[in-house]
Image (cartoon, rainbow, N blue to C red; front, side):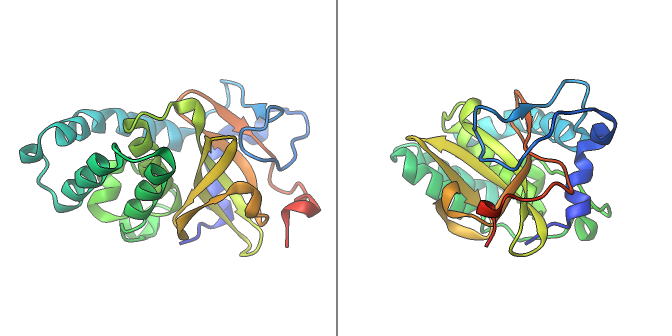
Length: 223
């Protein structure tokens, strides 16, 4: 369920050609985290956003009409979403995280024939995916449950304990940053995951740079 470091970070595209002030590993939603300029392209995320836009009609129809929601995993997603809609927000996060984590893990190379591909939700539900695909499906599900984009960030980070890059969904709620992770069904506070050091983060409106590859991870972020 991990992602090779080189393949995860290549999604930053032309980042190496752009001059930045030094960036340090930091917590998602920190006010000082550097916003990526518009000229820095994130082609895999941009393609995923186009796929999310294409999925919206099908997913909205599925939520509105069970008869139009026949694929088994999508029908199960509908049931989870309808039940979660009536729950408190913390339970919504847990329901979405647990449900999405049931989708089979499949490497991009095995499924799509490429090293790195960011799948929109319907494609992910249909055949599985890897870490950022779980994060995208959770992002879209929580947006449909009413959580605004400014409270959500898909974070590509270094899992220092495993020596791998990884992607999670970070959610700011009730003064905490919660992590929805395909490693665990239980949600956790980001502050508890001291082996996670973010590289960059995205949502549908903005992108943020935490640190560049090769920069040291602060001691407080390792164990």
